[in-house]
Length: 195
Image 1: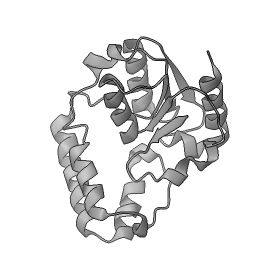
Image 2: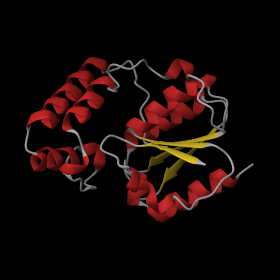
Image 3: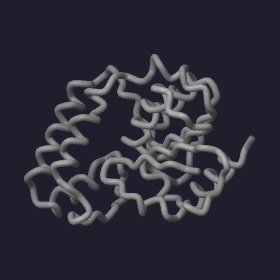
């Protein structure tokens, strides 16, 4: 069984293209914000046999105040600004490298989005680095080759995890599963079937 932790603005149907990937193990897949939350869950003892972490940060000590302020500014925009303007600017962030995901306002509670940004900010949550070694299950850490900052984070994370491998997806940025769905699906299938 595969459990998905969505990134910010993620919806369950985002993963429909991999729902037929079968495994008899309990696999946790977390993307971006969901990847960070998945790591926190695993450190807290969540019962999974394997984990796939995609384009996730580590709540690093560097730049915490700046990140908290940035997430607060986004939270205020999600509470009050025009949906189309907020989504235009959200997708235009350099981290996404020009990859646009269309989102419909009716799919969200905007106050809940603001709460998620505030409460799950990497500037607020404890840093993950000192506790990554506590995760004992196999981890596949995925980043896109064009997402250079997250490639470095992935290398740092894999060096601290007990049983982990880093897969750098070719021709992809931050949104690896949706930029390279066929490659991602094949790599996920390979990982969950490994013993």
